[in-house]
View 1 (tube, rainbow, N blue to C red):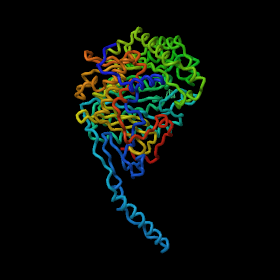
View 2 (tube, rainbow, N blue to C red):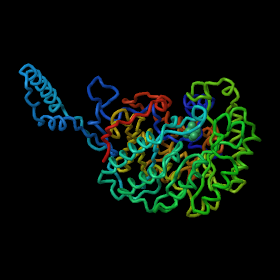
View 3 (spheres, rainbow, N blue to C red):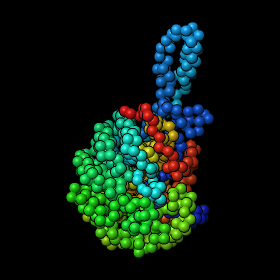
Length: 558
Ligand code: SF4
């Protein structure tokens, strides 16, 4: 272990860290700081009593740079120009219509005189930063049981193709609407990701149309484009999704498939029998290689009651499949999590202790490294020939590099993040499943980073790559990370979770610290004692459970 920055560990931080390390660990840091409970409403309160900040028809909305547009008064003024109702033949009806007109006019005049809630931008968009785009076309998938039992990602039961097509069209409308912004026109994009969930359940024509809407405004020629989904669907209609990918005029293409495990017992528990077995996956990987499409496979470990032999067998079979990238995710399962499995005491009780789960992680990590894979993020391992060449995967590395990358997200529960390094400000936007309003208005969520919050974002987001450069931190904040977070470093080094000393160029998680990364980032966030006045305290699980809503007369269409 490297020597610490030389400050006493705070007893409060140490005690809190020990308590956190007893809880279930997520070990992936996907969402980025802050988590949902700290986020507030996307638009200012409509009235002083309107805590949720809803705007009834989306007339009050936020743009991707934080600007609030308030069109209520101008829309009311426009409506005032509407001619009064035509004269009714009967005098009594005429009088009623006239009364209604007077009421309507009075209401509109009130609205036209409303004080504007418009706000200037939060960030000046910096076109020299790299940009990545995530698109979740819909939240549907096809397991035979409710979800796959363990899944904490947005997922809903499949509907007919027409309804799904309507949702995808709504997402396409969001893209067209947001990309009207002049400051995004022609901006080069490093990577586009269609996922998570079962994005490959989307019709090929719809995926093409989503890509086309992006390409109409953004420069995608140098981008890596990924499509996520379940293995069997990539082979449907004579590999139509692969052919569509191969034809895209972009730099690199890749698919990401959820495999989870090869163990028949667990596959049946998940209802994934028809998702593709090892032989289908092996053929799919070969087919992709022949089409110059990269392949990535997601696997879970520490399934309830799973032995280390079982987990190791999954890793060995994944290596035998020939994936360019293998991703290992520690299963999160505890009572109250909100998944189907979390309501089954037999499964919850069969989960390993954190000590045992961490030992499994260390063993599987060593196994993958010995098989010739290189760890690129907390969960992702690329085959060494891929990692060192121009086929190296882009999206995750960029996503975990807040010093240089902004992110634009479309679709239900998508996240966007923009940073203005010069002003030391940033913003995060989360689109809810209620998509019947323009992005980002209605129920959507929002968070503003100041200098202290940006420092937490930098450290916690960068650690998803398992390490970051101290010089990159200093260049962004003109301060030293070991000083800014001295108490956290002391507590984390005492627990053997992090390395970082004045003579080290990088701060890095220890292999054990990778497993406890959830606890590590919470320690950094706690030290900054950041309060969020506008936090709604919403729980992520509550967001996932919301029904997906789209309006029939959607007015987000560009
Ligand atoms: S793991 Fe994938 S297929 Fe299963 S419920 Fe989650 S999103 Fe759907």
